[in-house]
Amino acid sequence: MALLGWWFVHERRHPDPLIDVGLLTTRNFILANLAMLALAAGVMQLTQVISQLVQQPVATGTGLGRSATFLGALKLPTILIGVLGSLSVGWLMPRFGHRWLAMVGGVLVTVPAAVIAFDQTSLVVIVAVISLSTIGVTMVYTTLPAVIVASSPADRTSEAAGLLAVFRATGQAFGAQIIAVLMSLTLATLPSGQTFPDQNAYLVAFLFIAATGLAVIFLASWFGPIRPGDSSEENLEVAGRTVSPVLEKSAAAS
Image (cartoon, rainbow, N blue to C red; front, side, top):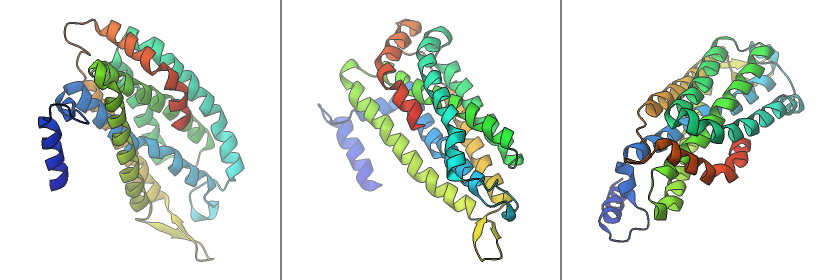
């Protein structure tokens, strides 16, 4: 931490820094990065938790006991939903604004995570949760880069986008470990000696994911205008066009 602090001060004072850490003092920039951190730490872990739940033996008291092939077929329609959702973001952003788009996306991942926490055995609920959360993740995941690009100097957009990727990777790494710990808190043991997360473990994991969704909503609610003195609609339209080539890849990744 001391080394990181020294590096931050060094980059802050350097006339031509490798990474302009001063961007982290910009309101929208730091909020968007923190929202990405929360999204990656919890919400983006939802798929892997549901994957385990769907394939877990019914004898454990929770889980559907389905195959990996069934799970893949279940997720196939949601991939198309994600692609269509990502394409719609570029159209919706100039009309409704980055703040509301990110907040609605946050709601679409928070509510499904909270619902499945208390209803883990219904296939209908699981399909609905996967579909809605895919739309929500896509909305947030494609809105945040647009906010970052529009909030950064023109000659710093590449490093700004790279820093956002660092926040995402860091969140995913920490989130995966947190989920692993939560899923091992209480276990169900089969006669064969195999252990699996029980209903309470899934409950805690899903509630953690819902909490990170609430964090995304809270952070997005504090987004300010994109650039002082400019039209936010115009800035966001430009930002939307800037990130549009990677929208489909973003949806597939989520």
